[in-house]
Image (tube, rainbow, N blue to C red; front, top):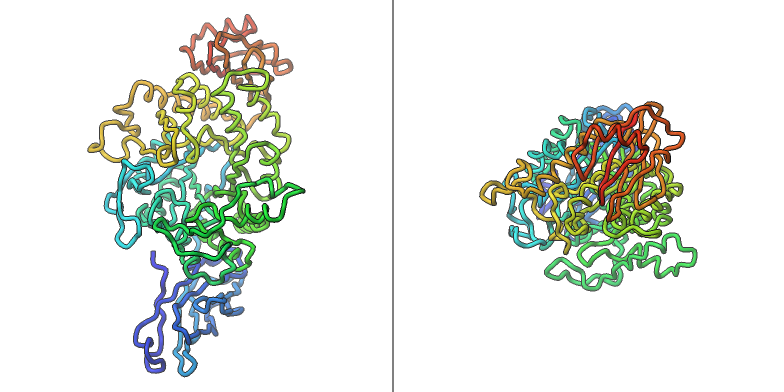
Length: 634
């Protein structure tokens, strides 16, 4: 993707540099007609010599006109505002002006395109309670094109699959080739860690230090590969979830190296030189005290350090309170939705940016794309904090449910007592009264920032099945982290938990292949089969996540919850006792039924006779650490 447009200059009227054609960068690189956008602010950049300046004086187009041209504090940049008529057609504009050194001047003529929209990109937009998300670290999933492993001119130039924080070579081509595998797990949406370019000297694989907001990392295949990936998702009726980062960017981003205005950046104290990892030694880091956002007694200095401090020394904190910067970020988000057909955003580090900006950003996205879906990463540790960051934003569709994650850790990693284990899970679900729409929360057992689920439960296959079954049947939209389905189990640093997916690097790298279910251990194959079984159950019983929800306080270390309507009930029973326990069917009270069928038992094969025995005895037995799913007709 090329971002610089040739600038045509009269050669006879400008001495010196006029003998070479100039290059100008415009963000956004192009736009579309019919976008329900009346005003578009272009950020133009021309590298100027000390005495030079330029002016944009005219825009020639059909029902699109120049409102104003404003020079930024950094004279290399101009803010060029266009007025777009509601019936403006797709077309190529002429943006005209001149460039001078004070003594002579040369004309400027730029072609800027308004494209025709492809409305087919938005047929499947948004997420709902029947979706299931699959989270992928692209660099670690599958290498579809070894030719893009190393790109000349970028700062990180090596591939080392034995090192957790190096690049491993996975790309969008590899991910696209395995979409059928992902779909077999029940996934209807795929969320990748960021795929915009991270031209940083180290740790560039993870994507969270963006160095160009309008460029897909060529090591992932570039824009062409991203569009192909989007098309293949659409063919499978699957959705594209993009990871966006309004809070920070990489130190090698030109908006930090040569910003339009120093006010775009929260830089305190004064910037120092970058170290060999791209870090700023003098940067003040955030204190991570998210409570300062709602604490009525918070010290102003604590609040400022939380919002304006840098996440890490190599990630520049962006000042979204600057109106020009805010406009840039909003237009960039709209651009990617339209350019690629993005269906949902996952917003990184939601609690850290200016909250007023996030509200404005979310509202504008939903104004232009009413069916779009936005969910936040608000990594907090209690329900009232989660409610604050979710409920304060009326147009925020959902949040990653970190309190559910914590309660599942309690339920599956610790024994059950009055205040622990399954009772923590029960109390967490009981706290849903605090949220505006908890049914759309994104639920998960593990993710790219925490140790692997199977490792945390000490490689207990019974608890693995219990966790997966609850993930696929609990309220909210479930998210499965890649490799969880085959028992990846690393617990250490980020580099290790984002380990390579077996089979993604070809036969030369071993026979163990998750995608082909070959070379796996018997436990890994069993786990993969179980995840697919749960996918079929979730697909077969559409009442899950759409019916009415009810749960029962844990008795005898059994937690029970169900989905029901007038015609049927799906009841989930989980036993965290070290001995067999029984659930009393009479606790269903007014949820009357006629027939009972056991559709899943994680500890034994289903015996059809057991359904009749359970119905007659009114008690359902559960083996230690066992889970059953029952279907009732009414």
